Image 1: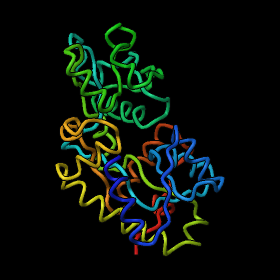
Image 2: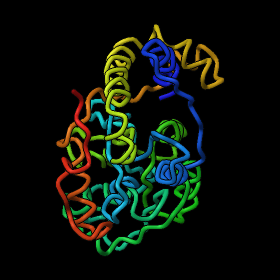
Image 3: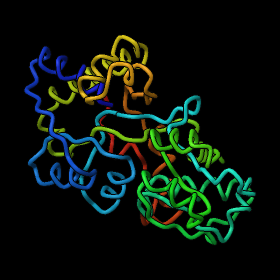
Image 4: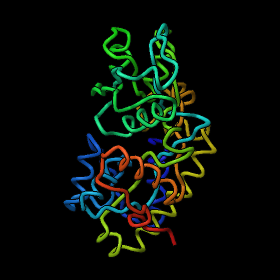
Length: 274
């Protein structure tokens, strides 16, 4: 996302939007700031905002950020190189690491296990940061880990881990991983600004998805990495226009695995582009 942010800032200014980009330490901190009014718009993972909405917080999605692309999966389940685990049934009774209990990786792992002969109710999930999961796997403290890039690539390159499954595909072939959100009240009171924001996300995402080489300098400048590293760094797919069908599968699985009380129509929390 850094390269997308860098390109969007110029587009926001050209559109007359006075935008200040603020970094936050977590999605929950962003959500709290947007709910409290200290931030107008935030970006967060899909699970935290859907969960907040299910609890009555009036958040609405206005634009997608990162998308799951099965052709280039950004995450997956890994096991040790010598592990006999091959199917969902093999995970029964095992310990799987996830960054946070009830997060996207948790429901993805449960869904993949259940769809591949396993019983996810027998799996024990433990919270381990993605950066530490490869070590936990190597030490035998976990049977599998739900991990994302760049840590996924590093774990596989070490030769100590192997890729078990692109577990996000168990949620849907394509869906929104993270997105831009605000409150329903702000969206109603600032329709023109939201429309401009959506248009810029659409335009900039379309460009960055198709121009990795051209945007490598932006990525290097924003991230503080070398130009060579930026040129060869894996890129996630950026979403263009918000769509209910890219959100509904996550809502349904969150309800199925009791992360939220019940499913609801994704269209209830979407501000459609003009």
